[in-house]
Amino acid sequence: MTNPFEDAEATYNVLINKEGFYSLWPAFAAVPAGWTICLIDKRQACLDYINTTWTDMRPLSLVCAPALN
Image (spheres, rainbow, N blue to C red):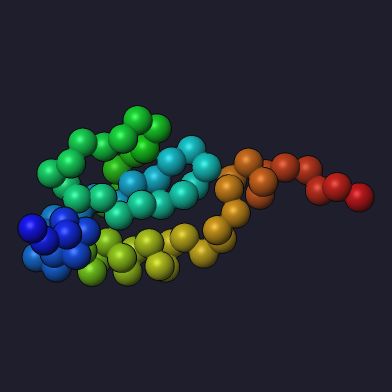
């Protein structure tokens, strides 16, 4: 059996959650609770999108938190 996350010809979803985290997800699999589809495309296009869009790995709750002095 091949890994469904490594099929270059398959269709994938780019998912995002409320904390601004992204995930590559096979299109045939159900989207997990708490995640929303933001792109549907081939694997490499999805990876390119994630790499150019997700530039700050911090959760949004931390990014939006007031600075501690």
